[in-house]
Amino acid sequence: MRCTKCGKFLPVFTKFCQKCGQEVSPEQKKKASRNQLIGLFIGFFVVTFLIYLLNLNHKDNIPDSQAYGTAMVALIISEACILIMLPIILLAKLIKKIIALIKFSFKNPKFLPIPLVIIIVIAGSGYFFYDDINDFFYEIFYGSGQDPLYLVQDNLTSAAAVKIYGDAFKAGSPAAFIGKNDIVANAEQSIAQKIVNLRLPAKLVDYKKVVTVWPGRIAEAAGDLSKWKDLPAQPADFTLTISPAKAKKYLQHTVEQLILLKEFGDSAIKRQDREAMAYLTAKLLVQDHWLNGLTHSNNSFFAGLFKPALAYSNDARKICYQVKGKDICANEVRQITDNLYQAAYDYVKSKDQAATTWTKSWEAAVKDKGLSLEAQALTTVGKEQPKYSPTVQAFQDDCYAKGGSLSNAKPESDRLPTGESGYRCDYKSVSLNCWDFITDTGGRYGAGDDGCPQKNLIPKNIASSTKENNIKLSSLSIQWQKQQAVTQIKPKAVVAPIKWDGTYPLTGSLNCTSQVPDLPPSFPVNDNLIVVNNAIVNETGKPTPINGQGQARLTMTQAKDIGSGVTLTLVNQINYKFTKNGSILKTQGNGTADGTFVVNGISIPINCTGTVSGTKK
Image 1 (cartoon, rainbow, N blue to C red):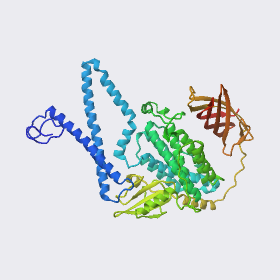
Image 2: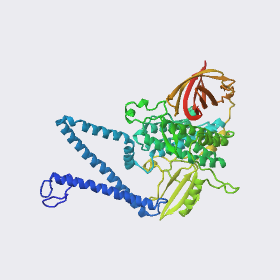
Image 3: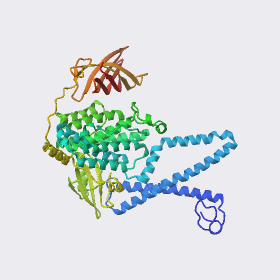
């Protein structure tokens, strides 16, 4: 606005002209404030439209143009400034109006409910959009173009891969682990430090804590290998408070990762690549751990503030999204991930029929569970197998289209959050030397000279503060084998297997969902589990053996005539784990019971999950 007396340009909030002292009238202030808001709104729409046009013209590939990159950076910075200024100005105006309304209401008490309702509506909106607002400001101040959770999980995958590969060698050759292993210890400490330095939104603080502690414990066990057997299989449970929209977004991302891992798992098994399967197993472990916390999270922000101890409960939260009219829910995806993890882990340990188990686990996930997961299968050309899987073939085609060259060399960059192998594309972007990288499990990364497109990398300041210690698992196995060769292997004392025979009274609960009217959400479980000759005997009399680790998977079909023309058929799949503490034998089980009610010829599906436990009499 300008001074009405001397014409000097004045800032919006000025009360007097600095040149002539003329007082700014209230009408001038209102008009200037209104014009400022109009200008910001117009600027927002113009900048958004320009960004849309640039993305529309180059939606398939980022052009090799420095001008394009500069223009996009300038537009995004302008958009961010506008999006920061607009809420501040609007909030200031709103607060001013509310204060004026409250003053008016105190003079006229009958209008007092109006400002109270407005405050409640604003607070409620803040609650529902808390995650989105938090993420928006996080991206402005700390963002790197990728959700920071995925960077943490990439690093955690590298830590888990070393643990899984170590377990595989330890299971077959315990002597290979005798002595101090500084390489593993240093690598795990480096991973833990990177996770510590990565900035995460406040809601993920507890997750960050538990996934930092776990690599530290692996590092400690690598330094004193007598502690390796005591390492937990995965990080500890964590508390999480997250909105339904954000939880659904994370679930969709996990399912997309599973679909990709089907293709890369098939490819690794075809070429008998245990190292790639170790990383793939690690990715499944990380997602299984994350989904477990997500399904037991709390969707109330305020409950997380006042009852943090209750944020992780035994009751699974219903988090679902739809694909082609079919619900895909977090609890079911977690069970599938757990089964796929076990199949992949068995392959890394070179168990018999492990490759077949991997395929059958996927068939169960897609067919038996009825999920609409359309995984890419490895195609064939005539009688010959293709050299690359579909995703890698697309990566190669894109590389050649950019004039690049393909190799198996891993980029030398301390900003890579993974140590696994893969395919690297080196190409020119104007005068810049750039690279793209796809790992053997489908991870995508990219960088090069300053100005090259960057994909999924650790921020420079964090990478420079930690020593690069990504290790190649196959090289690590050679080192362990050399240790074994120079070590005198002492024969193990023969240990008699534990006798689990007896009766175990089981108690627990079964949580069910169905369209049957008035169906209770949960049912108590009271039953007896009978073990004879270390095998569970079910109602059909068919024994289910308990393996050397005290595990058994019981599958049986139950059909009941409830009466009044109603029958119920259930297929039960339960995983039991038997443990011994002194002379006390216990068991715990978790699983599913899926089936149908048939009412006067009409089938109604029912899906249940539950847990049971019991102590031998």
